[in-house]
Image (cartoon, rainbow, N blue to C red; front, side, top):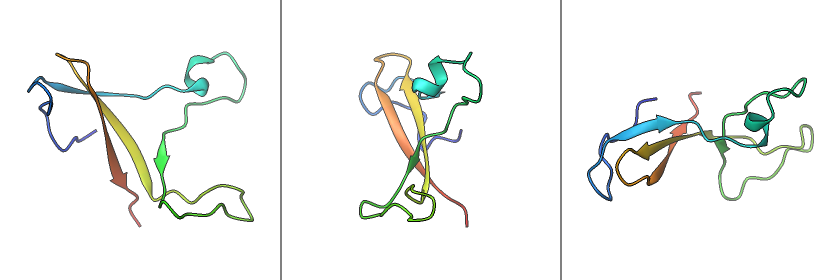
Length: 80
């Protein structure tokens, strides 16, 4: 992941890329369950009547500061 910065805004510590875990990440033995990368959508996006989901406009990446532990989230726009 290419972060926009390599230094923490809080303490100037080093930022390290991390993966955000959810229920699909902590239950690896369940058949058919895989990690799904977090996404983001427009604030006024409506679920599709066909798919039942909101169309994502990008993905969410995360970094953690190795000094203070602050987690920073970055949005990466979907390439069209």
